[in-house]
Image (tube, rainbow, N blue to C red; front, side, top):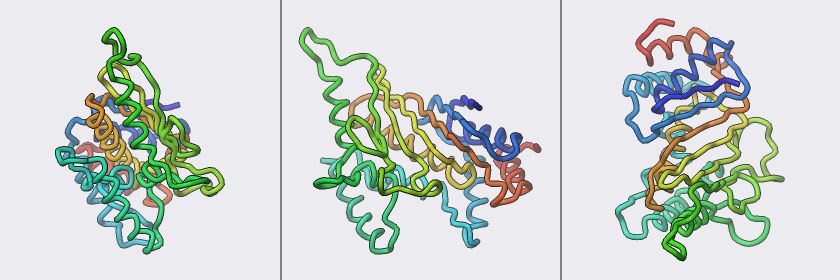
Length: 265
């Protein structure tokens, strides 16, 4: 197991990618903990990665900017927290965008699994709204003025939902690689902090991981804001982590790390 513990997204991603390169490009059980996911990103790191991606967008390898990857987990442009019925607006705008994606034969993304999980019977299930409602009810004062338990787990799985957020759909998702690489998201309510953890079967650290961290942090901040609390720690476990040197070349990944850190490796 490899454990990275950093305060913000940029430093966590950079340290993880550097460690992966030192380990030969691949590792099992890579844990990345981000203590302050709401903190500002390092502009040097984000710019280096987005530049690296932009230079390769026209190649045969599908690769998208950090913002695009993040939006597959939480489409920030659809959420206006100060507007009336902010959650309903978010779900409505996503549904309209998703209808277009399906016409373009690109039906799957993580956020759709969270708000429209495919149900065997009946309509798709909005796991996200269910979790928000549960957390709001958990924090309501009970008899004697006490709120809910200080520590309570909530999961957004990506299989059969109940008290979870689930992404992977049994019987539908049969690929060992590809979507969905993320299979499960859990939340732990600790007083006025909401901690988030995510499980990835496979995580690509050049083309996906940074955007994954941004998207998960936005998802956590959305839930925390709607519940009236703060986002705490974000933790990602990748059962298989890949620095993608087979795709981009070891020298190019080394150059990316050098540009992002400003240091020779």
